[in-house]
Length: 508
Image 1 (cartoon, rainbow, N blue to C red):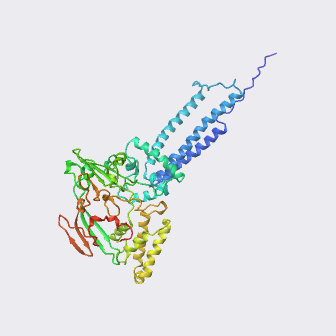
Image 2: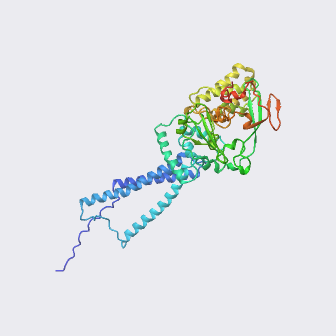
Image 3: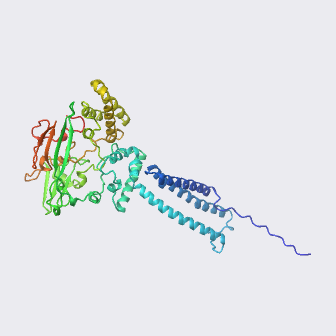
């Protein structure tokens, strides 16, 4: 009888390790996240202006979710392999077998290698784009909308509106970039859990020194000479009487190579070194100042009985730099008085409207709980003033009144933020001395050396008035200038500070 061959039963092929809930869930998550990344990146490329929310989702959140999904795939396979080996340890070896002579394994290896190469390349590009996005103005100013709205709005109105936030707050180099991101991590926590103060306190305690940021564009060695400035103010009387002051501001310089260190920039850390002690967080109260000249001679000025020698010894001493005077170079919250003056000068507010300066400032400084309430209140009160007090003007000049209302509303929305309790009074500007102490923090006539030398409060120290014009009546000066004449006789001008009366709100 012929031998009959009997086919042995072929063992059933076990399903691939990827067929488990964890790996399949990871694959689904990765695919969905990748699709979202592709869509958001496409939208980002088509947008004329970067959107902070597209950026954070497209380059940070969704890629993170995709990586999480991809990691779930091998994790699920590992768990599934261990489960199978527990059931049949003799059939599944302890470690996976690699045999490149097997065409299937070669194809698998080639596919995985190609995926890794493409994924790493895309991740590198995405990581750079994420780094670039975290350095963008939109990321800094718009992502935390409520918290950063005052700073971002003021930034857009400032002379530095085309300078990126990181150029001043971080600067070049990896070290400060890492510091800023570590600091930002706490800020994210503060915003997420509403732990931030209102208003945000200034100055920034750990701001990078000005020579490493500001002076990369503003070259202090090239500062010298005087600058002509023209200041135009309008009175709070019915005629909004204009008053103009022309003066030479003695900017000067600090580098002996470009002339004798003199003027305001005498204080720069080139020819001289200034160190001071402030007793408040905003650096507005400065009872002790030390000046060291180029030859190393040290002069100490102090306010009598303000600090004891032991307190001075223990106090934190700050070396003066640009931001001690230019403390609001970008985030400028202008006083209503000054903003309305500029609006009238630019004819955005008609100066023929009676008492328009006075009333505009009055409605700006009123107490409002929200910006929406302020916008409505400004319209109601400013329009109501002309309806009740000047009905003829209201009837004949409605377009001008509406334009004035719109401009005053714009001024409020750009300078005052009740939700964050921010306005010009919260962040004083130390340039000059009109609305805050500014220069008079040190030059107040009270800082005296041991031998009686005084830091004088003298108008001619920093500027020379060329002319004053009020109601069309000029008080012309010479090259040496004229004495400043205040509209109201105050007697000894050195006995008061401008900010004692000029608060930025309703005139005295």
